[in-house]
Length: 398
Image (tube, rainbow, N blue to C red; front, side):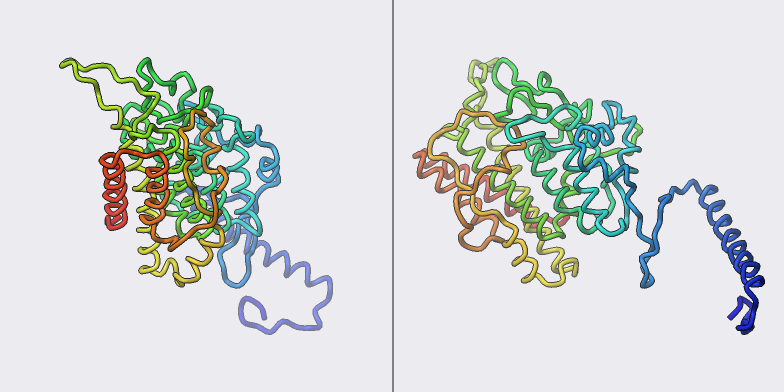
């Protein structure tokens, strides 16, 4: 059938067919040129390499060989995603990572690039400044953007790798001057206090997700990314595991009275010492908030149909969950890198309802307070603040 509706003569000669093919190509070229001109007029960027996905689906985007190579070259991956202190290279990092519909295994490859660029080189190794800045770029790149299927678990592992920095995002620090800070900037002051968290490893850089530049739309919101990743059961399990592991890690490093052993407060102007448990309470509240948020998202996505089968989702989450985490019975003095927290060994299988986050948090907390003989009043205070923050996050409208 020709374009005009005429039946094509099956006896056409071979000499005539190339002419018709060229005519069709010319027509398609003119159409493509018109589309390209319109896109240029509106300054709209489109992927260069597209592939027909078939079945009426929008074309998928082929991941270039150069990008695939980064997954096996961590140093090069970090250089590719590092936006710099002034975020001048952020656009290039975003363009490399953000693809609406990657072809084949493209989403998994992009996830591998993220992990290669942002995760510590080995167990016991601290994050470098470039890796920490790259983590900022990854979170900012997916601000208000969908994560393609297959990429979510890798992004969840990255957030788990930076759990101290990501949880700290809730502190609303208005003095975040760069996307990441070096170990010197993050180091505790003479009293043992630092805004970047408790029990920090010496020599480690930290991502400052609260950083923003005036007159710039670049924002890195780990809470928003967590909400996007929670739709995926494997990613959900990774994020939930990381928070429960962090609770065990944190409890085994504070004193039996629930204070930070590294903080030695100076007397205030009235002569009374500042409280040594304030930031412990805040850190634990942030942790409970994250767990409550995960359960809030699970319920909301089930109501809205994002999770079509909640029973199947919960089963998949449990299959991906590593196990339970319990704090050591003696206070720990080690200060391992942040990336090691979520990788700690499990203490056994999960008991009880995994999706009852409050129960899981209380199980770890109560075992610790009993083993460490925490004073009853302080144990009750810690239980109450975790309960309050968890329930608040669970029921908050987001």
